[in-house]
Length: 261
Ligand SMILES: O=C(O)CCC(=O)C(=O)O
Ligand SMILES: [Fe+2]
Image (cartoon, rainbow, N blue to C red; front, side):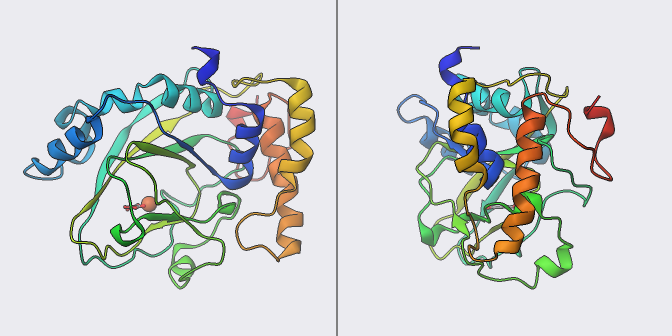
């Protein structure tokens, strides 16, 4: 893997703190429009078969810039999960409730990430995905999350066409209402870690990491102002950062012990 495409210490630290990282791979001119045309030509949503239905997507998830970011967060032997989905947000839709994907078996490691690719530039009217920075550390029952509406500090992924948003699997997120006159498409693919980290899998520079870590790990993100929550979160961030660097960290109850050995 070309080192140029691996993330820096600062980028990995920012992911640890915020729970997401945006990549915009350099794809050929007109590529995103071609993907949109292929999607809009589908007779039905093919579910997990979307990669066979739109093989162009191999170029997105196989792109060295995307692979470099995924390898940095999941290790070089990461695996593309068999579950993937085309999320079309049609005009006139209603906002989704805040949620975490999957079942509520959470941990403070980086075991699975989502790779959400947007083949169109997403304006605020087109129903962007919103994410809540830092919430990958907060396990919350779905029925409670559903009672939350606009959260202070939420980030709408109003991104340029061709952007891949890589998020921690546990981040709180939701599709928002589409007020535009055309559908918004998003391709959601999952990637899994295969082995526990034994060393940094990104472009690690110990001197840079030592400078960047204290500042990043104490960064206030999301709904700023709830200092006791940040106080609790700082330790979890430190644990995640240490674990990614290959250090042994205390095993929280319910964590994947097999991944820590
Ligand atoms: O379409 C989106 O922006 C998000 C969809 C989503 O998160 C879901 O359906 O699980
Ligand atoms: Fe979701």
